[in-house]
Image (cartoon, rainbow over all chains, first blue to last red; front, side):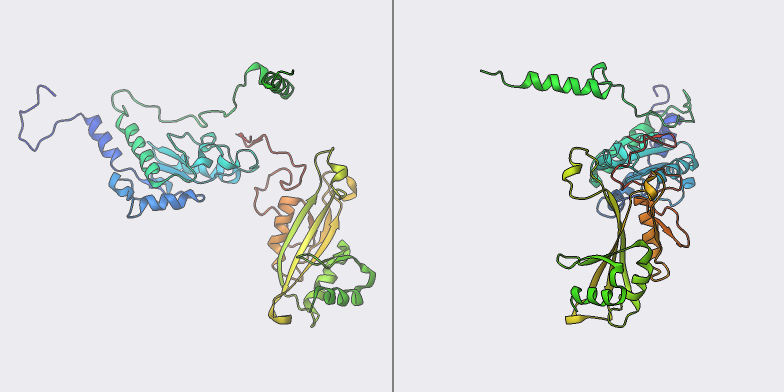
Length: 204
Length: 181
């Protein structure tokens, strides 16, 4: 701002258009009312007077995706709900952001092993910007997640660099490439047996 | 009225169609054949001495020990049970709500063909409350209730494969492109 600095009156601020837009955008995020399970209670607490999400400009919970640009997925997503989650995400106007709130949406949580109907992480369905772990997370944690979203908005380079409007869905497959010795069940058992033998105390 | 009295009334009416009974324990019960369940339930509801007008729940229970080593010691043959929990509010001996349990024993698969669901007549004609309970038992345990007005899955999606609360259920690896485990 070197050339322009100090050449106007005090009430005039010079900035870049991009920064101004980002500032406006980050200070007025409109989350979607999207409580699926117990985390929703904590999300409501975050919106209520004690923690007051409105301090960060994100207090206007909308009941329709078309008026929202932040999706807080609060609660267990099951397979029946997954198609709805993706449809709601697709209905939101760009730019849009997703917070995965709670252990279930981050990666299945307590339902990871024996939940036959629970999606093992909502990032298998929609692209997630910020993960807020916890079961359920404290309101402070959700506020922290919101501030990380704001950081992300602040760093957006829409005008100068452009940004892909379509985010690929899903952004990861979820399959983990295992090392060679664990690749099959037989090999994994063999590996575990060897480890056990090595750990056993020597006889005599 | 004690559970023994209820069983006596039932045995007077149905004789040896009451297959077995258990009177001690928290839930005293009788076991009847699947073909008799509607008649027994209607009698339990309508008889002035009993008047079980409330159907609390219908449960499906899968008796199967999936571990082949433990199966001989399990103490039961593999089978499926449908359990009806009843309550009577109008008959209150010693001031308590009278409760009773009826069970139906079924094979795990009809005619031992895997995939063919065992059948029980629906009791929706006796208690309307049975409607959703039977849909849930069908959904999760795979019991086919004949004569049910609208038997389809209640909790899981319509195109779900298998019955999750069966002990030999295998978790889906993938559902509509979403990784399952």
